[in-house]
Image 1 (spheres, rainbow, N blue to C red):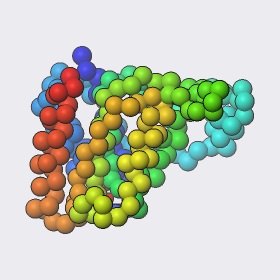
Image 2: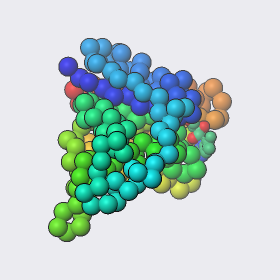
Image 3: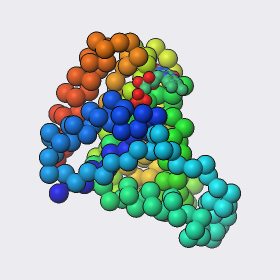
Image 4: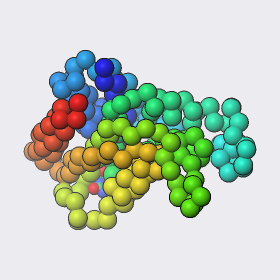
Length: 197
Ligand SMILES: Cc1cc2nc3c(=O)[nH]c(=O)nc-3n(C[C@H](O)[C@H](O)[C@H](O)COP(=O)(O)O)c2cc1C
């Protein structure tokens, strides 16, 4: 059985268009999937604690309580074989809520390690991943896009290489533009999800 993890990093949480689209698609395309839904957008992770920062940067300093939240988020991620991240673009890049999740999930000697060539090597297994990106801008190329290369690099750092991006542009330009973006994303995503299962 497919275990999907559906995460929202929008301030709208589970009411975000990207989240609602992904949820509906999972119901249609993979009706027997076990789906875990989380709103990490309107209820973002707390700021990193000093103990957590010390635990990550002090050799041998990984302690249970400092890394408890990080561990919980990594275990949740490890349990899925289909990962869907729903995120808006904020100021050309990922929203702070997504960055907070990343800072808890990308943890040395847990989700990645460093080899003798000083390269970061992922320790999680690869899994089918979709990043649904909602933006106000009408189309890609109109402004810098730091989100796509950043998410590609950071997911790869923990071992997740099978990543597809689905863009929903012009989401602030009225109902017609929103419907068009949703329709195109629905089509792209339903083909992609069903072909990979
Ligand atoms: C703080 C903030 C910054 C934003 N920055 C950008 C941006 O740099 N580029 C862009 O295209 N849209 C930007 N937007 C618009 C959002 O990406 C757009 O409204 C998106 O559809 C929101 O998705 P959501 O409803 O899932 O949160 C920004 C919105 C906010 C609130």
